[in-house]
Length: 101
Image (cartoon, rainbow, N blue to C red; front, side, top):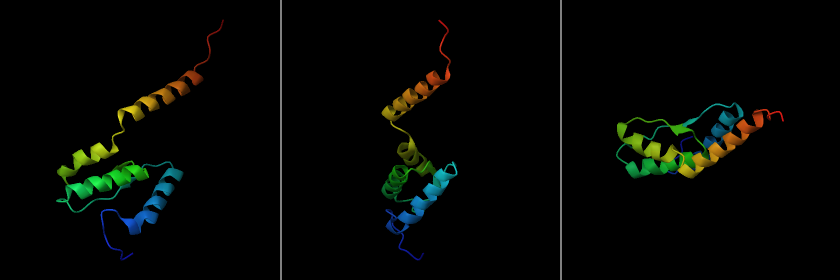
């Protein structure tokens, strides 16, 4: 594409979202690509937050220093986990036949 590379990846937004839509349409996980500027910890954290907000399932990593920020960005908060458990419980209760009276 010959676009300028930046942390916010503005020229790539369309490509990123189309990749996400294709992955979701085929029910497969999708990881965001690598961030090569290892020394730019703040930029990496910002790009992880962007990827998580877009809906990526994770991020490809190339250095051990990237593990913590990636985990922080892609780990759901406790409220989201609690809500997911409520939803799963509702589906499980729906599948269980009612006891005979």
